[in-house]
Length: 320
Image (cartoon, rainbow, N blue to C red; front, side, top):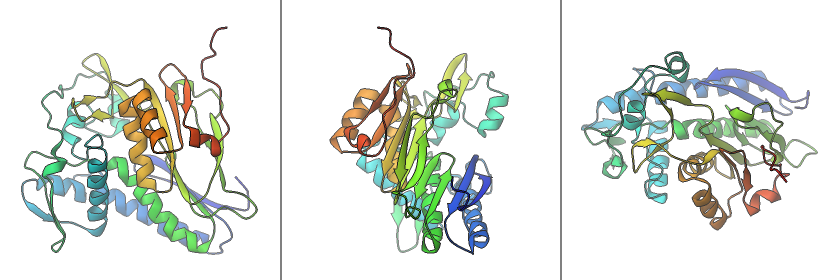
């Protein structure tokens, strides 16, 4: 990145967060405010903190519970996308996720990856349709055995909040653990220069694509990193809502470019869950710029992706 752009890096939400800001003498103060936004949202939404607002809401399942503005906003996003995807995105998958073995932070999980964990066959799914909202009281009601996991949206939502904070002061870019949200382009450039990294099995490979991003978000979801062993079988954190099990998919990662950070997060997630053929059909139909990498290392891009990025070769060279 340009040495004249102020930057700040810290860890939150289990990820490295990096901020860039061009042309503001108040960068240090703004970065502190931005870090506080990430810290505040982690305290609200982390399922690993017993005193987080999310944990408290989940403990109150079956009762009406007043919630904060941020919790209300993210839940509205989650229910909108659950409806739009006919439940392929499901914010009530926490019991299935925990039963699959993801019942602690990934750092802690990695240290005990070989230990057997319960089967998730009986974990309830699809309960988002029964969630009730009382806008006047700013309260929500969860079915008694439902539990929320909003982690798939929160980083994108928070990155958008931070980009909105920084944008009045200059061109900005927020990297929330690889999910990018950009404000205006830096002076003299068509956007912020970013790259799509190779998935974990191919991490020694160069970046798969380079593109300019401005007033947009770039999100990647995948099963290349958060993997573990459950009862002797490989498992991952993307649960298929129909089965309640880690999705059986031929996609390793999906990267989505969208105007909205939450939309990019959701579309990346459901793309991996759906598999390459179904995801590519959905994304092409809706003209979504997307970059897909299969388990075998093949790269597929949608037609609109070509308008933003340079193509890359398959990670495995095909034999002649």
